[in-house]
Image 1 (cartoon, one colour):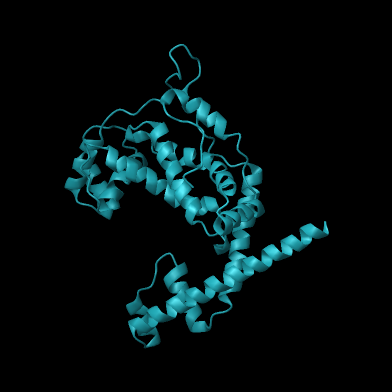
Image 2 (cartoon, helix red, strand yellow):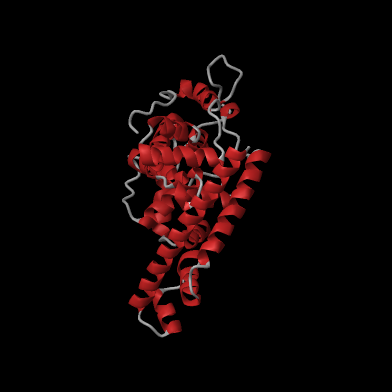
Length: 300
């Protein structure tokens, strides 16, 4: 994976060229992505890995640009995001039924956020989940509350933010003071004598009709695969699996143990067994699907 070379993005001056360069790499269709991922997974085919990485560079740029308000060079954010992308490709398992973009998004965001945390020398933020949540959501919450100023917050504003993010009011005040500072204008020219602005090179966040259709088809496919996989479970396993893995608000082991009148440890064992059965079923369904597609291609 370390042998993969990517387009250069070493300075602000090269950002425009970089964004233009990465548009040249084609997006992968589901079947092509699966084939490349299997080639990397089973044969460590570096060319396959390279195609997987380069086809998702636009995703990294899109995510990185959302963090431009932290005052760090966008090329650095993108570079860190690319590192996260390569880690995602390295660990991606195409047999689980998800697209690489869905899996890679977490790795990209994690890499960028860790870079931001280490780079903000004025923000001695620590590593607790609550502090990270405050750091990365304060600006978003202020926008939602239409608090467009970067100065001191009013008492009622502090209280509202602290309640939304479930942190102490003092932490909100301290973080807001540390983060107060001017953002870089997207209307600034690329060069002194240039009529082009940085915003002209932002990655278009809108999805094309083809992408929208593909995402819709992929969602339907994943839902169908999951529903079929759940059929291997008995009623109790299905209920526990749904309550522990699929519901937005997960049931606790204690709640389920009372419902079924068994121990919490037994509930945990059933959950693990159910997950393994579903996972195995999904892999088999994916394998059968790809075999059918291969047969159809050879007929044509």
